[in-house]
Image (cartoon, rainbow, N blue to C red):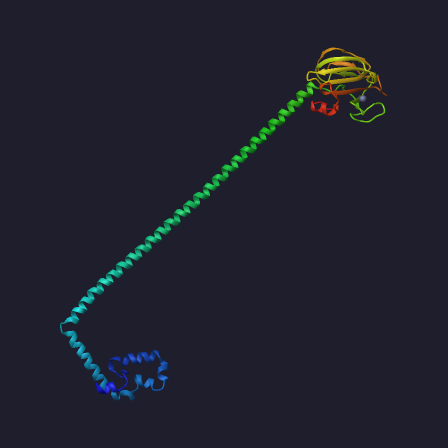
Length: 296
Ligand SMILES: [Zn+2]
């Protein structure tokens, strides 16, 4: 023992670990090239103290073996340690199982959650599509309704104009438009107060609309003039007439009330028509006629 303690505590050439040393040196080839180290591990030069070291080791091993063989506290300790180890192992396995179970549960829950979210997403998409379709349908219905209303409005307007065209007519059937409303001229004190329809003398002059003849006679520069008052109070003046067919009473649309002439302040035969709403100042007869469905 003393000899072994005097030497460096390197387990050289011990039969039971010599192989291990060789294995280590195989795995550490560089160790052999280190001066002295390789010899220390496996060299025969170091065998001088090997026998004493080996015998010391053997003695120690024998002592341990006898201790193991004899029943005592060590044995009980070992047995208890084995039970505890088994219990620990069992606990570890249980814990591992529990952890695995928890992980699997977690994975299942995650998958379920993902499935629920996917379903919700798809439902939302379908809902969106349905809403879009409904909105498109509503828009189409509104558009169709709008078009139908527009068509109805146009039809009503056309009917109104057709009716007006029947109830309002041009004062002469054939004519040439000459001096217009507001036109300046040396024959008038002010701007022209009516619309001139040039036509041959004797051309029939008709009631533009139903009403009452409230005046008929000579009127200075207007020549022979008939005043037709409509039910709404509008006065229509028919001037420069060569003759007056109706001089009083009710007339209907289209009734011949006089004939075209050149009486009064004129240079040629024509009908001078004035429109005076509410028996007041004259307005342009052309837009008024058109507003009442007359194509002039
Ligand atoms: Zn005139």
